[in-house]
Length: 382
Image 1 (tube, helix red, strand yellow):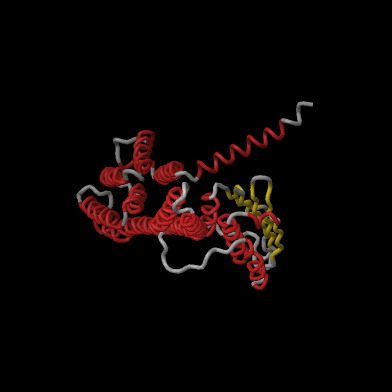
Image 2: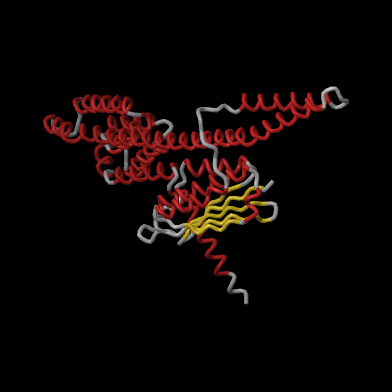
């Protein structure tokens, strides 16, 4: 009776451990440990030769020294020069060239082209001096040949790979910042669009209020309530003026359609190859103009994304009044010819759509399953 719950618990524990392992395996600390371990493994292959060449180091002591040198790679991101100087020490003392490859890569990778070139030139000059001094275990001709064919290419190649990785990181960071800037710009544009809609709809009501109050002020002039209606008219005019000052109009722009424009959107999507099945609650026609504009923008963006990434699939659009909340649901199937492709982009359009909903006190979620993608937006009706 107590055996069955063990299996799900064990699976959950294994899944949690696998997620933790996968997360740690790709972390910078894990990569640094891997680099240090790989460097030590390569240098360990030369432990017998090091012990034979230098009588001050026996096998275990040589292993300790090499391990200590490899530990400098653990700080290669913050201080790559530490491993670089340690590698130069190993060249002069032990004639060991393995650590310098990791060190030159680290300098170029985390400090850029100028530092990488400087480190390569310094390493080449230092190695030339070391190989030229008396006591080098090989004859001078062989030393020069080894220097030209092995030492210089090692440094140049390691540094070049590091510099290339550094430039790749810069390009990737630039692309990320551009994407973030595009999202921020889209959000700002949507806020401006919301502000313009406020100006269109609220400004129209204020205009009617101003005109009506002025008429009443003229009709009641000289009566007990004449000053009250005149003050009301002045207040309405000032409110309209303040609204015009706050909402900056940038050129002429057509007003955002309401729910009456959804049928045209559905027809246009169908002509483009993505048929739409539209279910519209009759209560939606009684919403305020701002909420109708939000409904239109959300559906428009969802249809645009579905046409881009799931062309040919039927799009289900449902707009219903659920108590005090308005629910907008747009779903479409995933194209079988490219099931791994995201049906709705997570770019600036989605960000602006979410900003529009949040500005009215609502929320927006996007859910993907194996065979469909659904966007659901909820916002208060009032």
